Length: 122
Image (cartoon, rainbow, N blue to C red; front, side):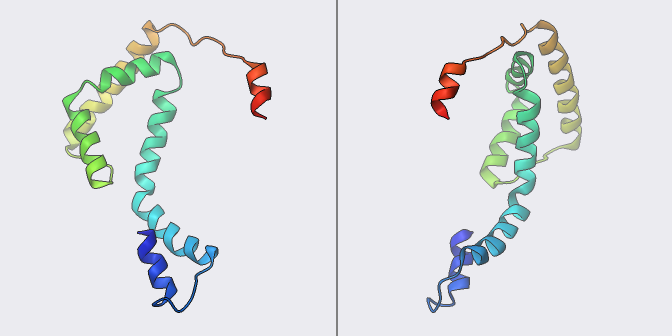
């Protein structure tokens, strides 16, 4: 996608596009095409990577054949795939159930602090 836009901007090699030109043409199309996918991934990260209980719920959900198929199709087609609305509703119910189960049984996250290592990275 980026290469196609740069070729168009170069007008047959007669000019070199600026960084701003590339960004305003390519990024708009990229965001339109893939923005929803990244939005879903952002929500998944915020929900399922927030604690041990949430991570346990995520692991349990990944055992589902439907989750595996939707994940595979989404990677294959580069778009979030909503295959079956009824299965999506079932997945929502399973997600809520797994989160409740995960939060109720998981140990709380340990407090992590490593000021010495943090100072080395600054």
